[in-house]
Amino acid sequence: MLDHISLGVKNLKKAQAFYDAALKPLGYKRVWDIEGGAGYGRSAREPRFWLSEPEKGTARGAPGSHIAFVAANRARVRAFYEAALAAGAKDNGEPGLRTQYHPHYYGAFVIDPDGNHIEAVCHLPK
Image (cartoon, rainbow, N blue to C red):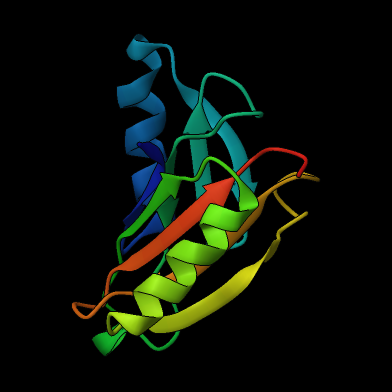
């Protein structure tokens, strides 16, 4: 069901130090460093827990939450996006490839009525 989750943090460096130490006994480590965030997992191929600084446009610069749901295929990513918009979500990134993550990362992004960042993602080649 869930592909990954991102926790909004006020101070990325402080949060990285905490999670670097706290997750190590569980076998997780920081596997990605990107501008404004960090990804944790057992390998760089599958970061499942992310830290992120507040996104531009969030209320008073508050950290935001991000949840990504697994989609069985790209058609379901598109269907999620269309259904979410019809149900009142705001567009935050139409369906498409996000090759900065990996060559087959196909996702769509919306903001739900409460301001949460919600994604559907398919990792398959087609």
